[in-house]
Image (cartoon, rainbow, N blue to C red; front, side, top):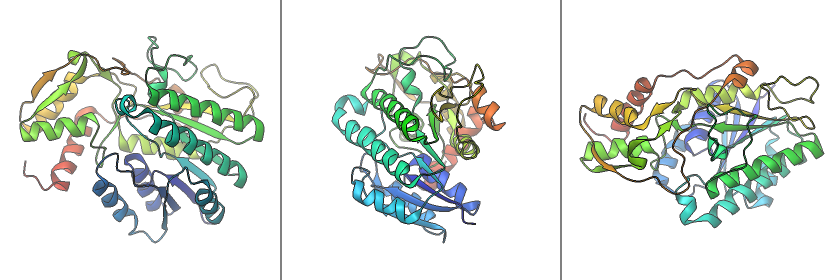
Length: 337
């Protein structure tokens, strides 16, 4: 029997990596992506070119806001599982262009949830974000912690989609898993993210901006670990609650669950930069800056629930992950080390 999964954001960083891994395992994948120009579309096309080499890959280029095309695509492909990764990303950009986030992240996600309900998928998996923890000071973050103090429009839209998905799960008994990702990095990453910008700046001898004067901590999570976590969770759709484990975020009224995927290891931003410098054998020109609006100084995931549900826990060391990214970067841009 064909295993069919529809992935939104299939030309994006996580979507591409997930699609490729599933295609290698023999799944039939339908990608859905609008090829947004938020960052270099050339990179998105390069990712998709790799996916198009697989006979078991098909693709629709359209916005999620076009519900007619979305519904037709999903009803025609008939996926067992939908993994919704498409979104307008970026905490800082959400300060400049907040309305973009409302249409893409809220309306687009609502359309996916509605379509998943109509075709009665076995499992709907939706990307949320660690940014929903906002001003929480208790770390590491657990899925059962309260999340009422988002600090950016981006984070607020992600929290909103969690609430919408829960309501649909409750009304229609739709199995939904929300994934809170923690600072994803690795080959084929987004150019607006720290590792990409730092690597580019150091190679070119240009200053790199370091916020909060370097007093930043992140739970950097390697892309392969994110993908393995998602794939493991596809096999664990939430079920109706009976006895809920004290660490489980499973809803008491719906087949709905939230799961952190992070490395469960807090790394200081300056140590991250040092790992890049060491592998490139070149020092960064550091431009220390104050904290940016909407950002948080530290993130750290508790991943006990992920491990309990799947037996899997991310484990890639930061030095190993940085090395793999830089090797890809040098190869992709044809730069000699």
